[in-house]
Amino acid sequence: MLTADHLGKKYKQLWALEPLSFQLERGIYGLLGPNGAGKSTLMRLLAGLLAPTTGDASLHGVTVRDVSRSRRRIGYVPQTFRLYPQLTAREWLLHAAKLKNAGTRLEQETQVKRLIAAVRLEDKADQPVGSYSSGMIKRLGIAQALVGTPEAVIVDEPTAGLDPEERLRLRNVLAELAPSAIVLLSTHVLSDIEAVCGQALVLRSGKLLYNGRLGGLAGYAQGRLWQWEASEREWRAMAQERLLSARRTADGILCRTISEYPPTPYAHSAAPTMEEGYLALITGNRGAGS
Image (cartoon, rainbow, N blue to C red; front, side, top):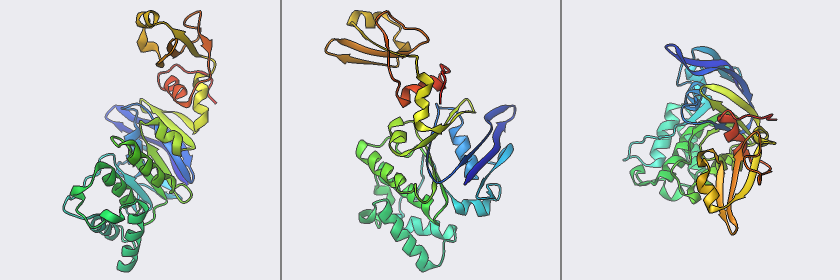
């Protein structure tokens, strides 16, 4: 179990992350929030890369303040993964295995071979990583985080900038970790969260707003999600920044928005999606979420 207990980080007089508490068990958790919400701060605190101002985090009772012990048990994949371009993937992973003291030389080689296969890099394992695509580098980043068989893996924006095929490949790699490890996945791509996560944490302005089942997010827009068909002229005349979505149809433009009252006489109540509930939550337009 990965536990945060009143964990917080302050810089001078400003909280980058206000004290929060939660517990995560095996499985994949999404970490959501706009830029500046405190996601990277939280991940770096959990990985032992930042010293907390208040509270603590621990993995099965081992505090992240004990860096030498916790870093062997927690894998971390930053958004930007920097490599020596002349090294091969195999050389890089063997280097990581030595740093983590992951068994004998033979055990390290066996583990590296398994990880290369797990992230589908067998055919490129002995080529310099300077020749890799961005998707391959991110898969290698996940592989290095898995060296030493950590009990928790923290991943920051793994699919940013990738094409759909590479995003799917990377999501599958992460999904395969769920039965054996705690995975905390931060991303702005909500479809990635929906595809692999059962639960989510939502941050805004350094505060934890939500920690629960992914489906519960839709409740924050329940009863206040409105849909109607607008003509081209009506659509151009309305305050479009207040719309959640606008899609052209054969009869006009299908509009959706969140409001306490119907925005037009033609609007009718609609069932919100997880994404619409999430948007209602982070913009402060909250209802009774579940």
